[in-house]
Length: 245
Image (cartoon, rainbow, N blue to C red; front, side):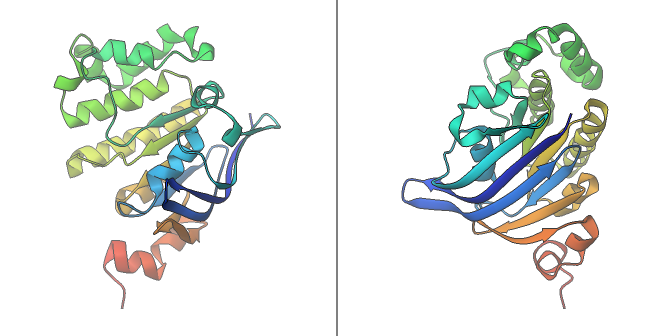
């Protein structure tokens, strides 16, 4: 099934504070696209525009599925989720006083996913064995790494076609960051997902990205059509690699 997400000339923000200035980004079927930038540069706002949580003041957000184009700016977050879009939010945003299994089941409320609850929860427990071991444990009592696994698994419970991952490295040790990013790649390949990942850890992001964008102060300042183009960009060398001359 063909899929294409296109954000074109997006202006968005919070009241008088504008976070995005004419941002254009696209993601095609089967790709992993990285949105690279340090904190406070608009990555999360862009993700929220896709999910209908922030309404752009200008520009368009469209999702094409099976040759039908949907204007996401006119849909509710629930309607966007029902199209097959899922997000792993920054900071996990779990229900801390619910168990692991209860959090997973809440991820399966999308009508198209309800018939596959058994299959999907079995897949999540197979992929994240610690979640099966702790399925009766309250989510808020788990470690940061375990909570990140649960947040990813909860998104997978909705049987998504497009997965948005917002800052998966936040609050995790370098070892856990590496394993989390590798896990996203494995899940993408196994599920046939299309992935848009917002991340400030350049080294980890390019391990799994096909290409990417650099966002600074709410503007796309560089589009790398390949990882090699990103690695050789002067801005990347200066801010991420420390090798600019």
